[in-house]
Image (cartoon, rainbow, N blue to C red; front, top):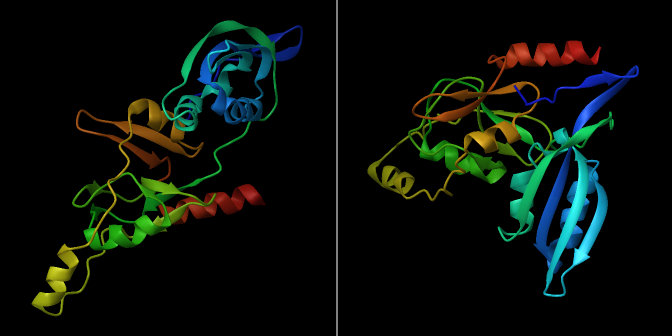
Length: 223
């Protein structure tokens, strides 16, 4: 499941580990990066402008606030930012942090990805799998920009009526799927998901594979 930090009770109060973070970034990205760290309960302790177009930021931030941060940091700085962090101390619990605002695209059956289905589903989010890839029910196959999960049939084939239709299907244009490293997968997963690692691949799946069972569990949690 999603990584969790080890907490401690100190003098009767809940404490969590904090990291000291040092960031070097071009001036143009200071606003975006400080906003990201603020959402994660980071506290700016020092900012140094080197006068060369680069700025150094020193933060103290709950360790759990760094889960998933590296990917967003590299995206915001377009790969130009430098990030270093080290354990500092245990601090009082900082409360709830920002959670993932996107949902998952989930396969609703076992089979192989069809180009026809993928071409339709890619318009609704970012896919992690390409044509002919094996999938199974409950496997997370992409990211939904909306907060809800989306169960889809990515194995659906187009019904062929003649040779011309088959040729047109072969010409379907697909965006390259996003390749997930183990680090990216661990950063991405929600509380009801886990990472499955095999010698051949890294996959994300729902803890409960059956969509009906997931829906019933969600309704029970809301009552």
